[in-house]
Length: 174
Image (tube, rainbow, N blue to C red; front, side, top):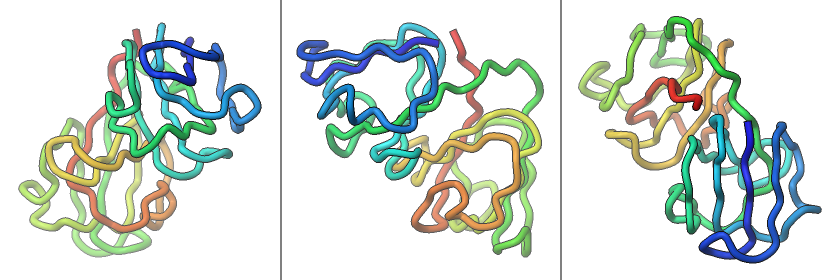
């Protein structure tokens, strides 16, 4: 895995190359306006210690922060997503602690409302694979990275509300 952060747009200005997870990028650059992902998939965070807005990036070039759906030029921590080639499975629940109606999924879902007839997802259990939740249908809006584990409340995956509009598997690791 390898990613390069640039302070200015179009890959200009001070840069920092990263090959591992980093909980605090603040000492390497003051702002981030462009990124090159040379290989692997990454989740970037607006604040240190994997907090704040999250952005999923796969291999490619992002000449300005709008290209990765950024809300601003602040990137302060990053996680490399482990390569995974197995099956994918998760369960979504309408209430905290796995209560209420349940939806099991093994593939991408462009509209949670169409599948679940409900907008709010209060808890989730990821059995297999790595996933990205999106706030709005058709993979738009705020993004949330989920790895295998239990999420008893939407705040466990970093969301400020229970709105999940769509979700997809992370399958491209080149």
